[in-house]
Amino acid sequence: MWRDALLVGAKDLRVEARSRVATNQVAPFAVLVLVLFAFALDPDRGMLQRAAAGLFWVAVLFSAVLTVQRSQAVEGADGIGDALRLSGLDPAGIFLGKAGALAVELFALELVLGAGVIVLYGVDPAGYPTLVATAAAATLALAAAGTIYGALASGSRVQETLLPLLLLPAVAPVLIAATRAWEAALGTAVAVTAAADWVSLLGVLAVVYVAFGVAAFGPLMEER
Image (cartoon, rainbow, N blue to C red; front, side, top):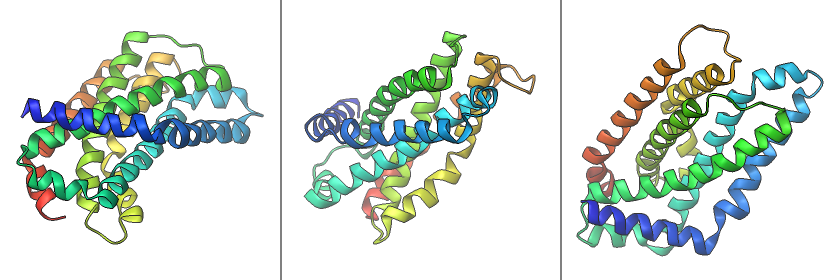
């Protein structure tokens, strides 16, 4: 399973390195979202700083949807999905490889967006261990959920619109928990809930999504 995961993950990362979709399309879109938020809330600089955590994760979530859609489009156009089904690779390994590659792409994007938040919103980063732990757990959860729902929507004629409708409600708890954890780390939280509690919730969500993907990805591939 792990060998198959490495093969699939390396394949997806090579495809991204050659196409540079995340670099040339997804990253500019995500930065543009942050810029538009800054224009909308700029008269109230204090509100912009207080909302920075939520705006950051909304941009990450939108970018995750675009990245998953692009991955499914490439596989559908080139017949990669059919080739993977006939390859004899472990479906669990395929899931782990695809989710791992997506997590790497999202984490790289988060580094760019983090710099954008600092520059555009004037946020003073603090609580680095909490920020990193939150980003790691949330990214893993988003990547796992995106891979699951991407496979579920890939067999539909309207997958471009079906994927956001399926994925966004499913990852709403990830968005909420990641935002609250970052707010606590940045000192902008209104509630008194500790950041560690939110990070723990993100860890549980990540484990649930990964476990479900490992168990269910085989049947999902057969339904395409």
